[in-house]
Length: 130
Image (cartoon, rainbow, N blue to C red; front, side, top):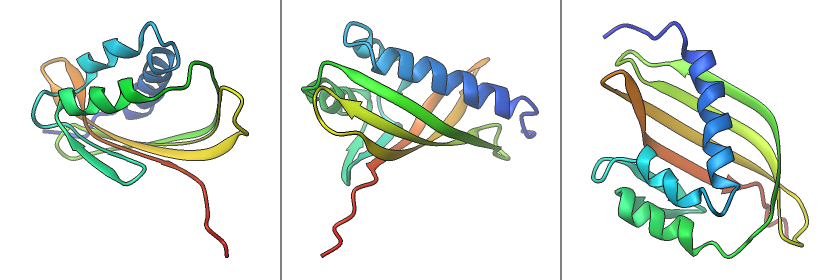
């Protein structure tokens, strides 16, 4: 499979779609359609999850209702198997919590004429600087 020449546009479009779904509590359950039932992996603040069901259990367990998000950068790279590596840098504010920087990395794998999230890593930029 060749490198996808539209990797940048696909990466930016995916990030826009993903966060539109994630940030709306009514749409968040539809994220299940972006993950594979067996071969998707997520690392959420160090917690390892595999498969769409476990990933959605984690996402649905998040208790915040309001999200204010600022995306600073979306960097994408094509992969030799036709996939796309996406790294997001941004700032996130949930409910009445203070804003925090975060990083989220996705690997999209091709499936037919579309993609699914094979890997998803999320981490707030919190530092324990004692």
